[in-house]
Structure formats: structure tokens, C-alpha cells
Figure 1 (cartoon, chains in turn blue, cyan):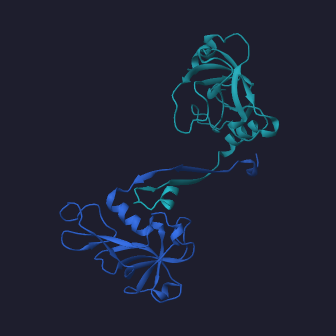
Figure 2 (cartoon, one colour; figure 1 turned 30 degrees about the vertical axis):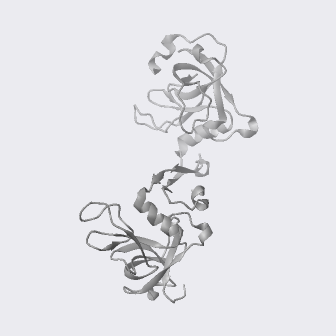
Figure 3 (cartoon, chains in turn orange, brown; figure 1 turned 120 degrees about the vertical axis):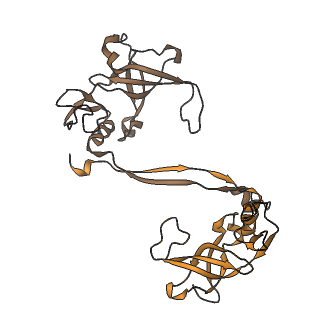
Length: 152
Length: 168
């Protein structure tokens, strides 16, 4: 039998899970849908973004949810030269830890920048949300961060 | 998540599908079996040492550990060795319940495989029943078990227990 007669086929296995968000993550995602970031107030007064369900020190419920951002500072980053299909951007981009203005913790998301030379630890970025009509209450509602005042 | 785009209430659920993408190849031996299905025929392979015919063949004899190189065309009929009547609905079910799932030993084969039995009330299925494959229309044949619509009784008298007792 010639090799060409050996069959090939694509095979896709998919599990359509849906998760309950709970009140805190749910509020954070609702905020993203509305185009704002919400952080949780910890027992030590720190603002935790994204909010945790429970206080990381006392394990009690976290305190008040407060708006933060939309600007922030890159704390750490890595350039992705060859994005994978499931990545948020289908062109080279950076994964970055961004500490939003008013927050005391950094969150991970994509930064849409023209190239790695445009980024550094300490670079100021701001959120680029999807158009309001396309936002569904998902992390992907935040399309990417972009360098503040820069072209991308 | 369509309800959340129109509803301005708080977000309570999050779709988190998990998807795995495979490039599947059945290999040489099973490709022959599948090509046979595309022609409306069952093909197995014989072990050169013990003489057993496997369907579908994986290309080797699991007993003797040697390659199975001789292709053997099998009959369109076979014998029900054992069966199960499915009464329980489950997600993704494509066949109306109740239905019969049976192990079928094709004529000329030494290995049974699972098939759907139709055209018979579920309480009349029995071990030893002789059945035949019903294929999809010629134009719809593909290299897939979907080419076999189901098996149905072929009208022959039941097979003698001695002929299939080794395959239970």
C-alpha cells in the first residue's frame, strides 16, 4: 500500500464547560463588560486586581470593590514573536504583568505594541477594550493594553 | 453567553470550553479496513502464525507479535455473540432508545466488533442470532464505520453456541 493510501483526518475533542463565576469574579467580569476594572480591598488595605474571592491574609471575604486603571505600569513582560492560535492577538505581542493605577498587585494580559523595543519595565500602558456591543463579560473584553500615547 | 450581551445584569457564568485538536492517522492496516468500508466491504487481516483473522486489524497479531500481512475479505453476515439493550438516555445520544448494541463476529473473522442492531424488537435479540450489515447508499459510502447503517437479522437459523463460544 502506498503511503498516500494511508488515511489522515482531523479530530477535534471539545468539552463545552461553563463555570459559575461567584460574586467577586462575577463583579470583575461585569466591570470588564462595562469597560472598567474593579479591584478588591484586602484586610491590609491593599487593592487586589484581579480581585480574589477571599482575603489572601485572613481568608475572610474581601472588602469593598473599587475601580482602578485604566492606565498602569508594566512590571514585567515577555515578547511573543510567534503567536499561537489561542493567543489573544494574532500578531507578535507581549505578555505583561501590568499594575493598574490604584492597584497594589499586577495582572497578566497582552500588550499590543509595534515591537519589543517599544516596551520596558516601567512603561506606562492603558487598556484597549473591545467595542461595547462586543463585550460579553469575559477577560477577552479587554482586547489588550497599549503603550500610553503610543501607536500600536 | 448570548444572554449576557443583551442582559445588563451581573455576570454569573463564564463559558470555558476545552478543545483538543488532533491529526489522526489510523495507520496502514486500519486504513485498509476503512478503504474496504468505502467500497461496502469488510476486510480483516490474518496472522501468518496462528491463522486468526482480526477485524479491524491493527497490523499485528497481539498473540504472536508478528505482522499481519494477508488481507482477508469477510462476509457481510455474522453472529451476535453478546449484546446490550440501551434504555438510558445520555448527552449526545444519536439513536432513539431503546436500541441494541451487539458484539458481532463476522463470518471468517476471529474477533468480534460492536454494531447497532435494528429492524427487530429489542426483546427478541439473542446470542447466536445471525445478522447482516445494512450499508448506506452507494453515493454515501465513506472510509468510516458510518458507512454501515446497522445490522439486522438475516433470516438464517441461529448459530450453534460451539461456533462462537470462544469469542465471548
